[in-house]
Structure formats: C-alpha cells, structure tokens
Amino acid sequence: VFGVVAVELLFNHDRLDEEVAHAFRESVYNPVLQRLRMYTDPTTHEARNPAKSWRLQDRVLEKQFSLSNHFSKTAAVDLHMDHPGEPALPAARLSGRRGLAQHDVE
Image (tube, rainbow, N blue to C red; front, top):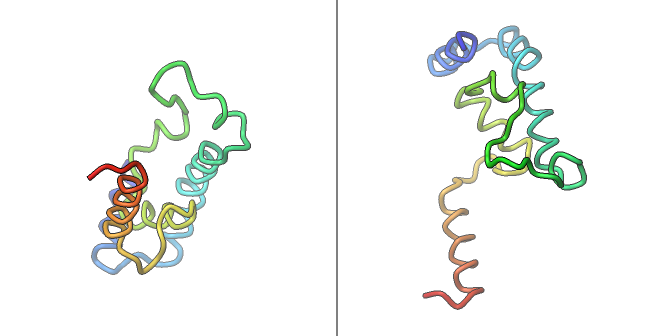
C-alpha cells in the first residue's frame, strides 16, 4: 500500500527515478501483470473456466489495491487494452457506437 502511494507521489512530482521504478516493477507490477495476462488470455484454464462466484479470487491481485495511475496505464498498454498517445474515451465511444449500430439500436 505504501509503495503504491510513494510511487504515485514521486511520479506526480516528476521524481520517480529508475531505481525506484525498477524495484516497484519487480516487487509489485510484474507479479500483477503476470496474473492479469493469465486471466485475459483465452487459452488459459483460468480464463476459460470462470469462477462459480462473480468475484475473482486471486491472492496476488487481492493484496494489491492499485498499481498507481502511471503503472495502471502501463499495464493497460502492455495488455493491449490501451494504446499510448490515444485518448481512451473517444475509442470507447466509437466502439460503443459501432456495437449499437451493428444491432440496429438508435
């Protein structure tokens, strides 16, 4: 918890250096990203067989409440859910409009 807050503050004040960022990646970001990749890959057992409950129960993800704004954005890019330099909201709106048009909803 304190590591995420520290990384967030350092990043917001343009003081996040390589050493701190590397340590955060190794101890927090990489384990979380590995778990998220597993759940977003349709070829894995975990992604194909959803839990009986609506709640995802994963020890690694449950102990990490956040990755900070900076590393959350990085994870979205790494998971191909966002593209650097492109605002997410217009892309989401366009995707929503296409889905509505495809189903003849006005």
